[in-house]
Every structure is written in structure tokens, then in C-alpha cells.
Length: 280
Image (cartoon, rainbow, N blue to C red; front, side, top):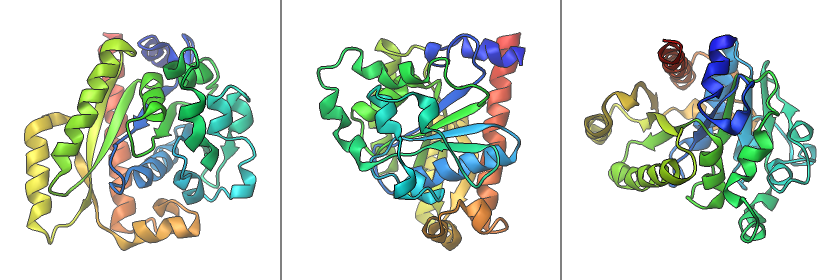
């Protein structure tokens, strides 16, 4: 556990003794597979033996629905934690996936930006709520809303790193440039430790030449930051949320599920590499 404690020292969000690594899953564009990636990467990390907390920070609450958390079960949510009305522990709900818990979201979160407009440390509310409260969790994934407003800003300030899902479409890089600029501003003014953990290509269609062109373009711009794993277009991935399950539980053998297993392996490899660099 000592190397992980050293990792925590890079960033104060988790407190000096906490082992958790906090990763925001962000893209200001909707429909790029952000929530799908959050749910299934969290599940795959848990299946690999890691204790994982998924924070649903999107007012739509799709990550909560996708993990089978009913609206009635969301009595304490990320909204309550962000506003300081309840402690983090009160909002944590265990899922059907062993070692995976979630802080669910409700539509109330959509009003949080207005409520916090004059609040002190408004960009640090989530960081403060997580500090020293993450217990035995090794990874905390934050599913951000599809915008670059105050909610996403809070997630970036609270995180060690950002994972960016990127749909294989014509305007992919154009949208990503805005997010990169935001990450650089946050790093420069609010969270010097923030880094891009990686970019994952989603909705990859091998029958479409455009997917290959976009993938080559993205790799040309971001090099090793782009994961080798690509997430394919897969009907089983699309079906799984309606059953309240991650695709790894819905159909473990399908190509989409296997892709997320491989992605989790890459994420863990990068995290271990970071630990080795810190230890040395």
C-alpha cells in the first residue's frame, strides 16, 4: 500500500493517507460513449480485483440507471454531497457488481450550478467532499455531464487524471481541442496535478473507412495517450443499460464487453507505470 500512498501525495483531493486515484471521465459532447465507458470500465476494474467507486455527476443519472439503481433508491445523491448537505458515506450505494459502489445522481444536480454561483470555493466543492472520505476505494471514476460547466470543473479539480472517450466521427478532434484547453486551464490555475490519463476511441466501426481515418488522426495528434483498445459499435453495449446492467454482466463474451476488459488492463498498466516512476 505504500506506493499508492505516495501517489496520493501528488494531489490533495483524497487526503495524504488515502490510496484512491480519482479519474474524471469527460467529454463536453454528448453521445460519445462517456457514461457507457464509465459504467463498464468501473465494472472491469472491479472484476480485476480493485475496489471502485463510481460518482454519477451527470443530472441525467444514466450511470445510476445503467447499474440498476432505481430512482426510488437514490435517497442521497451526488447533489447532496456537492452542496454539503450530506457526507459522502451516506450517498454510497453498493451495486450488483462485487467491489463496485456508486454515488447516484438525480435531476436536482442540474440546479447545482446556479445554487453555487456565489459560493466560496465553488470549484473545490467535490474535492473537499472527497478529501479523506474514500476509505478503501482504490479507484474513483467520475461520470461528468456533457458540458464544460461548473459540474465538470468540480470533477476536474477533484481528479488526478482525465480519461476522454472519443467517438470515431468527423468532428472528433475539433471537440476534443476545447476539452484539452479546459484541462490546461484547470491545471494552470486550480489543479496542477491534473493530467490526461488517456483517450479511448469509441463506437469504432470496422466497416467504415471514416473510423480508421479518425483513429489515425487522433493517434497522430495524441500519440501514446491514445489507448490501443478501441470500443466497437456493438448492439449488446446498447442493450445492456435497459436491463440495468453493465455489458460485462449482460453478455460477457460479446466484443464490447471484451473491449472494456482490455481497456481496464491498459488503465491499470498505466497506473502501475506511474507508481513505478514515483517510487523511483
